[in-house]
Length: 113
Image 1 (tube, rainbow, N blue to C red):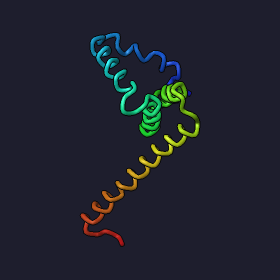
Image 2 (spheres, rainbow, N blue to C red; image 1 turned 120 degrees about the vertical axis):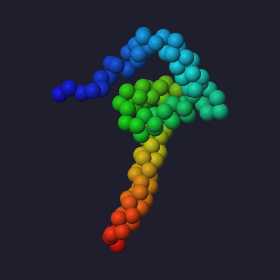
Image 3 (tube, helix red, strand yellow; image 1 turned 135 degrees about the horizontal axis):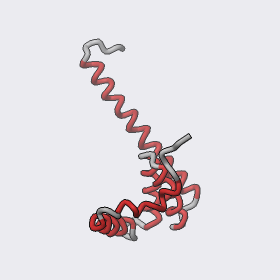
């Protein structure tokens, strides 16, 4: 069965810059600055990125930031906890959207009890 995501594509990421090299270079500079040491350590940033990768459901980023987090010293317990944080954020957002359902039901004038 054909799948959209291919693990080998992660290594080909830079190809996206071939037809817009100036924009690619500016992105690379900004990206490097964002993920460098700062108020947050590079390991903390990798864990945040790993959690976001799970929240946005990107297999490419999950692969990349799993490797990055490990390279920066994260362990399985830390990575797993980061994924749980992402899951908690996603589920709380889903529940919060339940308020939209309640408001829409009330607007109909026939909201069930």
